[in-house]
Image (cartoon, helix red, strand yellow):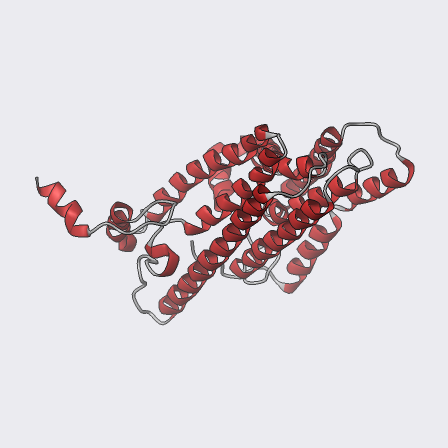
Length: 320
């Protein structure tokens, strides 16, 4: 989790920005044409998956191969749910829904996306396409010459499953008309808490990483761990906030009698559990941090914020 050292020039930055802004246009143009002429009879979920497969899985993959970097899917992880919520709210087959519930979910999705997009660019020092996700880089080394085709499934098809899956409550909200009730308010509260927790956690992490970067530039020793603010009570409070957001959306689906929409949030949680394992293994690699982080693991909750246990307690157990 280091600060990105900006190496791409202004020309490369502008090129990547142009690509990112233009690349969703095929789906947008097709859908606007569809709204005008109703030229497609596919079920809304089938059409959403078809557009995702053609415009994201195939087109993003080809661009990633040409650029030797699959950076763009990270940026569009934040944008695709916004596109989906507007797609579901305007699809001709989904005209019967509660207006207030729709607008509440739509507004929160925009707030969530703006927060996450801001965090993405802040982390990348306001550059487009500086690097791809480190997990993709690790897999690139792992699969070697096979990575060109493995990446299609590992980076893009898998993201389609996750994003369409976790966004299923957005579909349900726009397919069932039921008066607003107390459970909708609970869903709003959980989603809002998730956004706030993730924002503060990511901001605290960004400030910590920036200070460490400055210390390194000055030749000073770096602080091994962030153990202040929310990070004092959870090793991954940003992940906890993100999970609150998706499970809050799932409450809307359950409230409308579609409890099966929990499957998206559940799969995403399981995936994030695996990512947490990878992140923690990565955190233990630098020698200056390893011992301190092992103690941090023993005393601090992994996801759900909770009171820390005493280091002396673990030392006494070790000596028994």
